Image 1 (cartoon, rainbow, N blue to C red):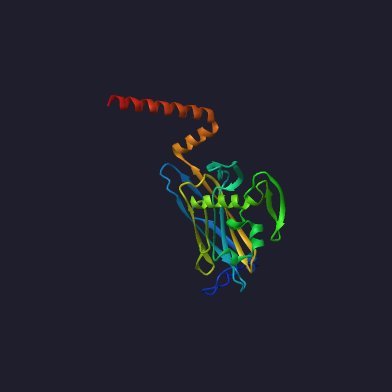
Image 2 (tube, helix red, strand yellow; image 1 turned 90 degrees about the horizontal axis):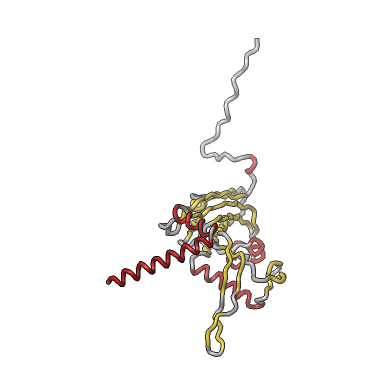
Length: 270
């Protein structure tokens, strides 16, 4: 008579031994997550601070750098330049940039110029100096610094000055930020970085990229999403203004007229 034997016990793991997945044991990669994947904006919103954390799996002896890039929804930027004409300061012809990120930040373990070379950063679009901003009335692209993505527009040689103005205005509003020491390793392989959203942060979908570099080349990337949306009465007003712009405009005019009439009655009574 045959009798089934009990299964063999699982092999003992020595204390302190780290169990690894066979599929990723020899793979260099990065994994990341956000403490909050959704930010609610109401009348009391004063900005938000979100922690991005993760781990680096590096079975090699080659040191690795972590670079975090967070990009908000694109929005057009309209600029004018003060020019002096016959002793009078006048506004120049408006320039409209399409596709400039409403929010953009980079954080890294060390300065980006030490992490990778110019061409690599330009190809990935990492850093405000390599940020892709659509130029007005693009005509063609040329190859400079070994990268074929430099735009030549009707602005000619002034294009870079206008582009710097876009970045400068965004930085002044705390919407663009570069932190060369923003990624901190809290333990071996574990890191964290803070994403600071200002009060004027645009609503919409944000995209975060966590790059892992070795010897100046990207070896892994982790992609995350973050949603910033209005809630409560602010959201209702926002949606009404965008769905029914004419009705919203008429209502605003009526409210302004009623407010002015009420104020005049109060002052007259005094």
